[in-house]
Amino acid sequence: KAWTNIFIYPGYKFKMVDALITNFHLPKSTLLMLVSALATKENIIKAYQIAQKEKYRFFSFGDSMFIK
Image (cartoon, rainbow, N blue to C red; front, side, top):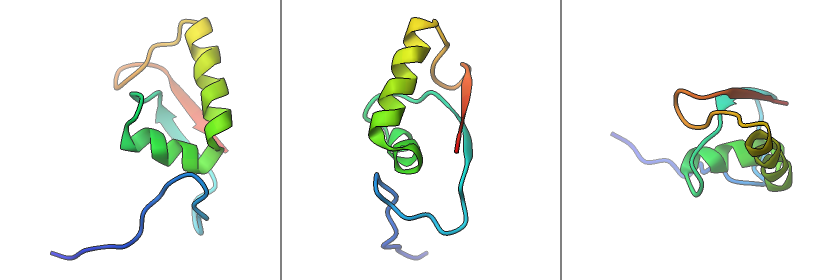
């Protein structure tokens, strides 16, 4: 057991990761915060708007996205 003080949120400076494959997550989720940290909140909002318009499937069994 141990504690950590590493929190990933928008603005976080990644050291080893520069891309992510993930699905479209629920609003206000910690996974959405992780995605926003890599691609900026504005870019994620734009991607979600396009996904809704194009009728992408969300959540665990839906479509995925590649973020770089």
